[in-house]
Image 1 (cartoon, protein in one colour):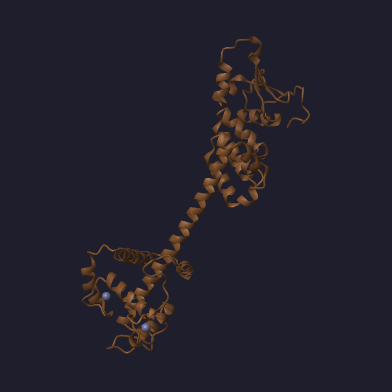
Image 2: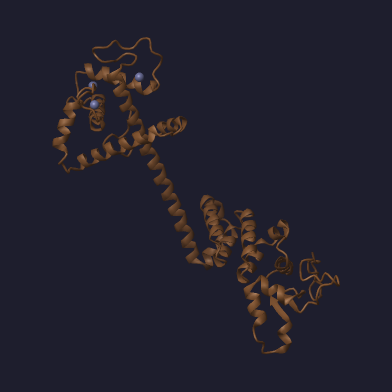
Length: 364
Ligand SMILES: [Zn+2]
Ligand SMILES: [Zn+2]
Ligand SMILES: [Zn+2]
């Protein structure tokens, strides 16, 4: 690498061995152009190589010149000399060490964008993305926007969104607030949308968990009414004493308590008993998803089916919401019969849902 105090100094640039190396003489052809940098560094180079590596440099080299004196120099200004050196070296051989690309990442990203060198753009984008911090993220975001690097842009937005409280304190953010209200607005919108998406996902998960719980209750209800579980079973069958604990013990146990309560409660539904009301809804729900009402052993299944046919025509808000719930439980049944890992299902089941109008939350 060239020394750091190279201003006003001409440094002999050594093109790497791949550059038009003459096998016979063992020499490079003489440089026919010079790159001039802001620091005054002059880098001798070869037109043919620059032109083949970058279409932009090619058009500069091929451009007819007004002044003959300027023919042999190409200025690359506004970035550190060392970054220009690495850039030119990359045009000769892309086997550039990762550390160098990483060290001048943002400059190389800018250069590779301006001079249309996609391979370098890809590598420098990656290097910049790896060095993203709270302090530089706003600056990098602006660069990503200028250099049309969408992946990097998105990564910056996500980092800002996830750490906004810290980003707000940085110089970069203050600068954007003072000078780029459009970008500020864009960032705030992104944060807002991310938050909304997060809320939607959470609500969806909570709803899904309610439907999965209801589906499990439906399975238990059928199993209790058909084969019997620990304390409740069909009238013509002994509750199974010798069977091991039921696979859905907690739900099954709760449901059996509820059934026993339902059978003996004095207040019942009209008396305003909330537990009875819940049992009533579970039986109604069962009937709505039951596809064999003629042989079904769940109480009231057929009666509810007949009643549901009359209610089919109803367009009331309650009726529509009820039909939606039924559809969701049926799809939850399909989901749970697929291989959703049990642990995940249990985790979800622990979460509560509180925003459904028909069965607000499911507790046995
Ligand atoms: Zn059971
Ligand atoms: Zn009751
Ligand atoms: Zn049934």
